[in-house]
Length: 171
Image 1: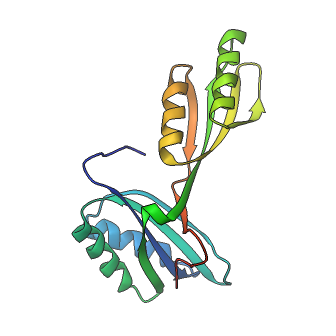
Image 2: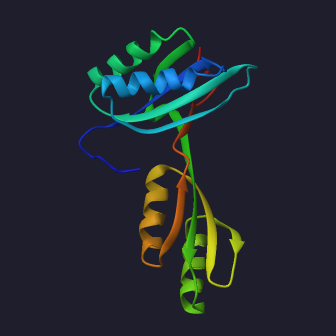
């Protein structure tokens, strides 16, 4: 996920009917309207046949408001809103395969893994697969360090988020 420091990150959530074609409608609208989306994640919720779509974008309040209004017009969107960054827990997952052929490099990588509270999930004689969960800035910092060792493959999930405390994001 590229960092754009010109505009603040916005996290938009949408509760949608869990039916074929809904994600296509959402992404088609985003594409047609020319919105710049950094990440989009989709998953099930505590309610049967309801999925949560989490979208991150950077833009001014007017652009975010316009995106929310446009998405709210899709019939399968049951609820949509923006989460307050100061009152939201948000995380991302990254899994990466790093070259670790020599023992000195491998030890350095293990030290970084410990510092960042990451975890090794697979080991071979010449590489490690590492899982890291956290704030996107933490993940980006870890990835920047790992670039020096040689990232062979990388997968990032995008952000998932929920509001803090007893309130629900869909109340």
